Image (cartoon, rainbow, N blue to C red):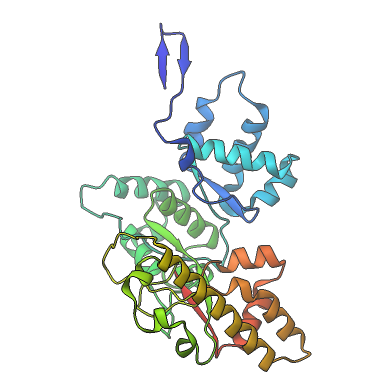
Length: 334
């Protein structure tokens, strides 16, 4: 923000307009404010009352309610809620995230730094002073390293734990209440110490690799490099769209006509394989018909929340489909 002659204030953003938001805004998402109290002080007397109402609601509720819920609560069309969220995101006042849920999965960001001189420790202690009394015996046990240790825990199978499990662990180990743990989580997300992982699903039908077009079965390097990498392509396996994974190198794609033709042939062949597989296993059950309906979402491009929203189904229903056809549906985190 700059000022002209001490009276006219103008706000500027150095971010390119196309950078915010990176992905389409969804009703199941919400806005995580970086500092709600500071943002409140920035509002001018003639600021939009709708925007002020939106911010006040976010300050009061935090990222626990979705844009859909907020739209109903403040009486604004959801399209207007999207616009206000995109506006605040563009000006760096917050970021669009998935609404906090017990099913969310978080991990420590690889970009996080924990040097002793990091002011994050002091900020964390200030937060603890606000949510816990200094005479509270728990203050001796709770620290940033211990909270991060809880978020680093995995299940007995070695898989990352969901937020609900972390909250139960914090209650059992450090006697932290769920609402206190949520405040600590919001702090860690605001400072980008934690990042969210999403669960995707690949459909890999039997004899998949042997039925790929010759250009890919033969390991044509150019055709592989000309394909776009999809989420979860870290292990060097062939994805369900006939594309290679990241091999640790950064090749420069060269989209020649031959490569595009090879990709198109692979996509068509995979489509035929999947439809043929569905025909072979066809039944009259509701689960099968739902599996057939959801098939386009099982190519590693749509995470659980997106599939649930687009198909209007519950998480339990989606998990039932995956468990029923777990021989060909491969879930993964990314």
